[in-house]
Length: 61
Image (cartoon, rainbow, N blue to C red; front, side):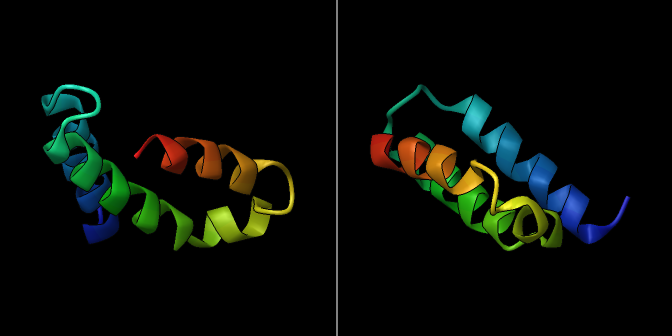
């Protein structure tokens, strides 16, 4: 497992650890979304429908 995988796991755990909508949850979710958006795989498939999904998720933050 590389550093990026470990960081993703940590952020996912942080999101799951806090109640939905709490300040801590929003902070962890924001960091997770930023990391995911920077992944090469995301950029490769971003022309599909991913940005729309992320904007809907981000809107909840």
